[in-house]
Length: 305
Image (cartoon, rainbow, N blue to C red; front, side, top):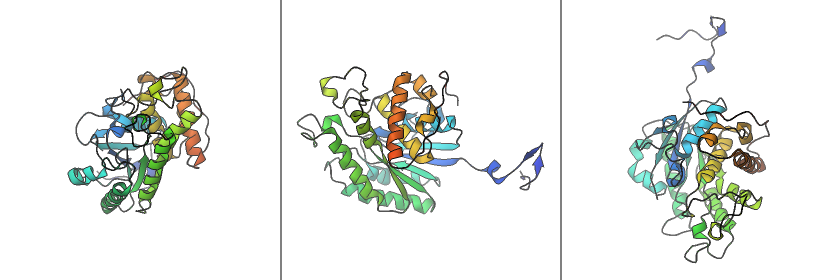
């Protein structure tokens, strides 16, 4: 099919290069922290995304896709995930799958303690991040990579068996963030570290979320963890997705409004949605990633494909 020359007016509409632009191809690489294990988000709206492993997962990528659709943005979102692993596993087992397309944007993270065998040690994350960045840059020299600095685990902080036992809950978040900052320095293709863990700590410090699920949840506060105190709750994954959305698009998460359809379908109260959107905005604005925009209102709506 031949396209009309640029500038030709057809049916009163000027055709421009933007009219034929392809959607931005986004790949999410991760583990259970991306596919949203332990929550209703895992199998929510899998039709919104392409699961390269054909497991019917929606997860955080589906939330991100939903947010971008509501914001009028065009993203083609895929995911490649596997439980309990770091980037080394993807490199060893899924290199061909990852190399099946030239990705415009990649959002990725490693194991939750930086190294499953050596908690708190960023060495493996740093080396495998560089290797993955080299692979992705070889597919598309203009690829933009974003690293997700994941949340602190309550089960690694409060029980005596945890690596961060005896320290504040913020300590793990800060150590994980520092590890990702080191990893980000290994490649010019890496454009940002998305501070999801820092957003969790902000939610706790501002009274939005409870910092210790082992002593019960304070009335009026959100438990960002699920029952294993390791993975996230629906609200925890929602906050993660808001942070990814704001970082990648530069849009104020509050502009989605407390009637945002994804949260409505997942059964989240409007007050929780508003509070989490505010936390995400504050964290992103502190890093000058977003500027304030008017929030939308109105009744909740169903998300549409």
